[in-house]
Amino acid sequence: MSILRRLKRSQRGAALTEFAFSSLLMILVLMTTIEFGIEMFMRQQAERAAGTAAVVFGETRSPQKAQDAAQGIMLRGFSDCIEPLEITLHNGINSLKNGSGREARGNPSDDGSQFAKVVLTCNWDRLTPGSRLMLGPRITHRSSTYVRIR
Image (cartoon, rainbow, N blue to C red; front, side):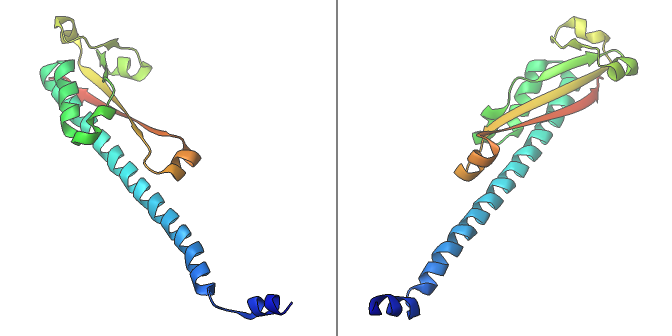
């Protein structure tokens, strides 16, 4: 009994226990913040890559050159997250409004179009185990950009 009373009154180790619990919480907050920052950075990179791909396609009418331009914008370690671009050609504003269009092939049949919709999809793995468990193992970002063909 006297041992239990002594343990109950003893304050030795209380600071260490509090530090252990609070440090776990702080590490969780830090890792979540880092994960969120990387996700925002990757989304910004994907948006820039889509814009660059649209400009290159508008100037060259080459889907392959647009794909290469998009991959060139992304950082080296993340360029493999880009899926093949979806490029839809439109003849006018009405075609854009109703969603009709045709796939770009990079051949002379593309010359009649006036607008192009470039869609870039980027998938990458989450970095921290906690976010994988709560939010899923992968992040998908789709970016759409319209360009007038010159």
